Length: 422
Image (cartoon, rainbow, N blue to C red; front, side, top):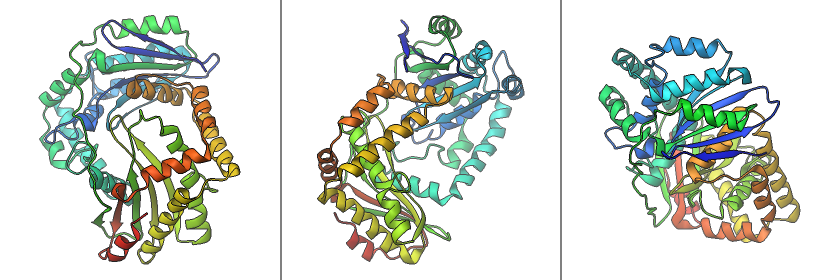
C-alpha cells in the first residue's frame, strides 16, 4: 500500500494514497489544533469552530447550500475535533473528486461564521454536552483525564464548559482561525481511486490562498504524580463505571508497538485476559476493555468496565490481578502469537475504506510528521518478544503511575485504596 507525500513552500503538507479501482475517494483537511491548544476562557472553541465551518462560505452562503451539494453526490461527510487535531472530510464516488475537493477547501478557507447561526449553534452544542453528560461511560473517561492532568489543557473537556460556549463571540472564531488555520499547520490527505500527480496539482490550486503565518505550538506539559490516585464523580446510575489506568509515554516512544500488543493481550477481543477473567470467570460485567491514549507529549493506558456497585472492589482487584500477572510472568509464545495476529489483522481490516485510509495516513503525518506503512508496522509488531512485554509491564505498572476514576453512587474508598498497589 503506497502513498505519495509533498510539502509545499508555504509549509502545507499533502499526502495522496492511491487505490486503483476503489469505489470511493476521500478528501480530508487536517489542522494541528484542538482542545490542548486552547486557553481556559476559550476551552471548547476548537469544537465549536468545527461546527461553524458547516454554516456557510462566501460561495455557499448557508448550511443548506453545503449540505445539499454533499447530499447531491450521495457523499459521506463530517468533521471531528480531538485534543491535538481537528479534521473535515468528504467521501464520494471517484467521479466527484473535484467537487468534494472544492467544498472541503471552500469550507476550510472561506468560512463566514454568520452570527445568527452561531447563536443557534450554541444551543446545539450545549445539548451535545448534555447528551454526553448522560453517558456514564463517557463521563468516566473524562473524569480519568481530569484526575491525571487536572486544570490543564490536557485535563479539559474537548467540548468545553457550557458557560464558555454561551460567551463565545464571532471575533473569537476569526482570531482562532487566523492563528491556527494556516499553511504550516495544515495537512490535506486524499485516499482512493485518484492519480497522485493530478491530485497534487488540484489540491495545490484549491488551497493556493491559504494563509501563511507563524506556526503556534501548544504549551509543553510535564507529568506529575507520586502515589496512586482515586477520583469519584457521584452520579445516580444503575452501574458503577470505572477506568483504571497508568501514565505511559508519548506517541513518539519506541515502546509504543509493545504497549499496543500488551493492550491486546489484556483487553482486546473475547479471548483477552480481562474479558475471560471479568466476564467469563467472575461474571461481573458486560463490558471490559483496554485501550491507549497516545499524544505528542503524554499518554496513558486504561482499562474500562461497568459493574454493580457491590462488586466494584472485586472488579478492581480482578483487573489488578491480571496486570500483576504480566509483571510477574512471561507471556507464552502461543498467546503472544495470537496477540500479534490480532493486532495485525485488525489493522488491515480498518484500512478497507478510503476514509479509514485517509485517517490512517493523515493522523500519522499530522501527529508524528512521518508515516509508516501497514507493512512497516507489521514488521515492528513481529519483532516483539515475551521479554519485551514483561519489561514494559514492569516499567509502566508502578504505584506512582496508577489512577482510578469512578462514576456512580460510591462513597467508601478505604478498601479500594488497599487494592491499588502493584
